[in-house]
Structure formats: structure tokens, C-alpha cells
Image (cartoon, rainbow, N blue to C red):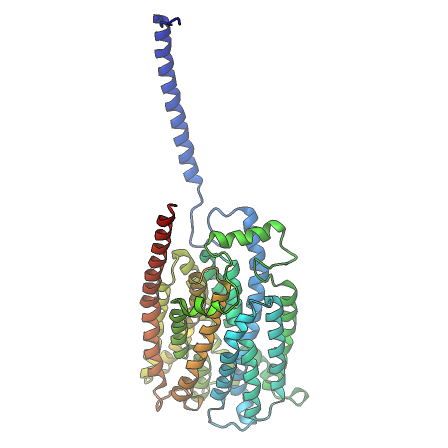
Length: 508
């Protein structure tokens, strides 16, 4: 075989090309760095006010817009009606019902709330398991129509016991709403999207409570005595009328869940992408409704942690402060009936602002305990002032109104539950429903013994405000420190078990 010896010209040619190659490589590297620098400059930056995750494609933004428009609007409208119907008894009570039905200074209003709570206890867990079998658009719209019929029947009541029976059945069917809608929201939205949407949902209930006050004030001024009916009776009639179009809207337009949706407004790509979004978020729909759901739920930490958190929140009687505020305004003798209905809506305005801000902050920082801790400290101040009670009238008015911050706890806890329960749909439903049932169960004796309406607004003999203050402190510690510690501990254990499993199989 002949050997080829390089010539001097060949060697010089190679040396020249090496220099050119190095120069070309340097040029390419420089251009790549320039492109990377330019790309990093154009890379989307997360902002406090963003509604979508940075880098979301236009197609996915359209999908989220549809979910927001239909699912979120339906959820808000249903909860709006629920809260209107939940507050109407209080508005009716201070607008002539107690006098017309000869209720006197007793605890009839507290008993109306108690029978409503009993209905919620009975229906809460069951209703939220049904929603995993019957499509939400059928179940929620049906429950709305049934409880609205019972609301309508209240305008015919002439005794307190009649009210108690109807309030029980209203609570029974209303129990499907809060856990059911929260479950639906958790089925469609990512963890980084959930807190602010949950906040908007609960905020609609705040608006509903405010609207009930405005409606009763308007009816008292313009409809009192029409057709021989008192203004408080007209309130129940109008509440029923408001519910009808919402029920039809929910029936025809609710998207159900991503794995079962047949919504007419989604494209095939959007239906597929909705499922992929949950899988990417680590919440692919899993689980089935059988007896193992009890082990999957009660054998884990989430059900105990969040049920205790929700129960502590209920025991503060925060959701009843609106009615205590109305009773305080009536007891002062300084305000007219329309003012007694209108002034407490300022509490709802504070709730409105708090819902928006805390939802955004929780989504932005990616955790909920700092927000719970902050709100808990504000509530501690409010209850401390009310416990002292002997303070100027203006300060009492301020803390009653500032108490509107309490409402953000429910969407924060619900979003936290959805996040920690992952894609197990039946487990999420059972935990959310169980939270509501237990919370309503524990608050019944507390409200009747410590904060009966007959002792409002000071609760001097029963020490109601002091008892609630103690529960606020416990709630603040539990949500601000204990739940995060549980989540961190058991999250690490889960990660460790996954890592061990991977080592055994030899996979990364």
C-alpha cells in the first residue's frame, strides 16, 4: 500500500483552515450568545397582575377565557343566589318579620340558622359524592331549583316552626354548592390559577349578601303593603325569581369536568388541552368511587388538617357577624330600617377587596400560609376589641366593618385542599364535603350556647366574643404554622418513597 506524505503546501493549507475554523467557531458562539441574550430579554416575566402563567400560548389563553366565562360565571351566579338566600332571613328579621310573627327578643333567628346548619350537615358530604357520579350541570342546577322553591314557600310562613322546617330543607340542598363548585374549580384550574378564581367565586357570595341587604331596603321602601304583603315577604318572592334564569344557565352551559365535558363551546383541541393542563400540574384525574375512597381519604393527613382548619374558622362565628352587626345597629336605636339593611354591606365591600388581593397574592407567592397568618392577626384584633366592648361607638363600627376580611379563609382552605389532594377526584370531593359537614356540626352548639341571637349584640353573659377570640387565635396558629408543617413533612415522605421506588427499579 502506498503511503501518502503531506507536502509543505498541504501543511500550510491545514494551518490556515484551522485558524478559519476557530474563527468561525468563535463567530458562531458569539452569535449564539447574542441570540440567547436576546431571547432572555424577550422571555416573559411574571408580574403581580398577570392572569395567565407567563408564556401561555394564545390558543391556551382562549381556552382559559372560555373556562372563566362559563365555569366561573356559573359558579359565581349560583353562589350569589345561595348567599342571597342565606342572608334573606336576617334581613327579613330586622325588617318587620320578628314583630309581625311575634317572635319577641328570643333566639328564633339563631334557631333558623341552626336548622339550616343541620340540613347542611346532613347533605354536605353526600351531595359532594353525588357530584362525582351525576354531572355537575345536572346536579347543581337541580339543587338550586329545589331549594329556591323552599325559599319561595317562606313568604307564606306565619310561625317560627314553619320557618325552621323550610330552613332545614334549604340547607340540605344548598349544601351541594360550596364544596361542589370548589371541586369543579379544582378540576379545571392549575395550582397557580386556583386561589384567585376561588376568591372571585366566594366574592360573588359576598356580593350576594350585600345585594340581599339592598334588595330588602328597596322593597321596604317601595313594596311594603303591596298586594297585602309585607316587604319581608316580597323578599322571598324576588329571591325565587332571581334563581330561575341562573338554574337554566347552569343546566345548558356548565362544562362539567375535563374528562367528561361535552360543552358545545369547546373545540376538540381545547378538550384535550384541558386534560393535559391537569396532568402537567400533577393532578391527572385518578381514583374511583368505591369503598377504597374511605381508605384513600381517612388514611391520609389532608382530611384531618383541613377539616380542623375549616372547623376552627366556623367556630369563630365569622359568617354570623353580619347579622350581629345588623342587630347591633337596631339595638342602638340610631338607625332606620333601610339603614340597618344598607350599612352592613360595607362589611361586604371589605370582603370584596380582601378576596381579590389575597387570591392574587397566594397565587403569586405559591403558598397560602402567610396570607392566612396575616388575616388571622387582623381578625384577632377585631375580636379583641369586641371582647372588650366598652369602646367608643365609632371604633365598634370600624371593627365590625373590618371583620369583612374573614371571608377569604374559605377559598384559601378550599384551594389548598384541591392542591394537596391531587387528581383523586373522589378524595377531593369527600374531603371538601366532610369539611363543610363537620364545620357546621361543631358550630351549632357553640352558636346556640355562646352567641344566641337573644343575647346579641354584646353577649355579655355568655362571653361570646371572648370565646370566638380564642378560636381565632387557634385558627391563626393552625393555618399559619401547623398545616404548612404537615404539608412539608408528608410531602418529603412522599418524595422519599418515590425516590426509593426509582432506585429499586434502576430508573432515574
